[in-house]
Length: 487
Image (cartoon, rainbow, N blue to C red; front, side, top):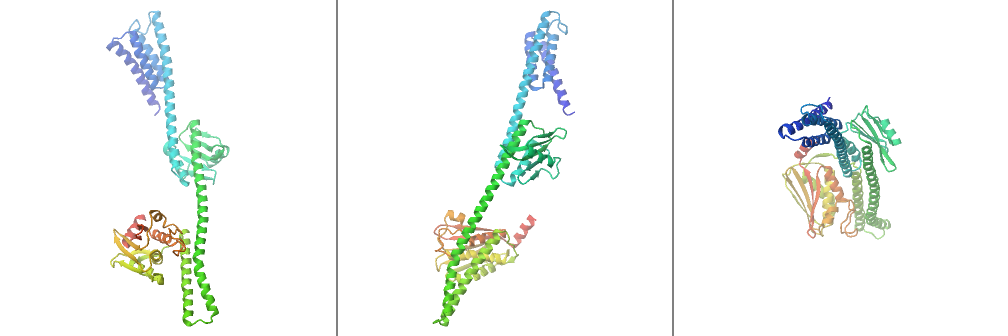
């Protein structure tokens, strides 16, 4: 019924419009038969351009009858008195039918071009969306964009690699067996009764899978174009995934190589010192009590350094494996700073450490052990890169529910390039391994611990004027509000 009413409306407008042209030519313009024929022919062309062929033919017949009734003698009658009238009407009818046919053909070609343009725009939009997406998102994006752009009621994408189905809804009327069959044999299957189409997703000689949809029946050329476009998207996703896997393997191997190199270099010095002290103790001859105590102290000191090195490596391994679990509790910032400085022991003896922590700072919710470890790494880093006997300043302040803990050194500072890379694992900046001891893991560990607490670690530096590293955490009350909002 919805499709009948527009046809009835257009037919009525065609008839009434044609008759109106004839009446205006006779009663208002007092035109002769020639002018009236031209006006009626124009009406037929307009009808052919904006209506279907049946309405255009009807307009031609009505125009011929109007020309006969209003302008061919005898006027006011459809009878024809002279043979000349028959010739005029026959020629007019033939020309009008031919003109209406041409107009209808032109209209159909125009509509076809418009439809192709719209389909091309939809395919371009789909291609652009896939180009800006990546990996697993491309599959979901293809399904969602097909519904959005083409008006499908249901969409199912089947990818042969991994035999995965991606659906627009949890339950669809499109059979999985049919999707597998089309993907295997590469032929389009359409069910006009159910208004379902399943097409192969092919690019060149490679079949990536199949795409099924409902409610909209596309022409064959559009189906092929849609299948090729989706195939390009899947090919892009698979290439990206292969590249990501290869990059992950490469980075993993590079990380292992760098870590082994760093650990080997850092282990060499303490192990050499321990071995030398142990050899001297084993010989025993000529050693006094003071010398023995000194050698034992060397062994203890180097052993502590080894324990610290192994601890950093274990922390980094846990962080990379996402196995860091927080035992968070409200703690005083001053307690964390004091514990971090105390844990450094004699390492801080060669520098002055100035603490500026206000007593009325709010509590922060943190894992005490991990946060002390993060602060220890920052202070230890400041000591390493500051001249001997210089001052390292630790400050803490609060603003808008955020507590900031800063560690400032008196070192050479960082360039802009180094500031962008300073938190990378094993990055050592301009200093080589012989100038400053360490593996380059400390800042990476501190950053990961800070972010695990929902905070951040930033660096501010000016080359030649030292650096300031700042951990920012939520105050205890603010942290509770943030967690409640996320819940």
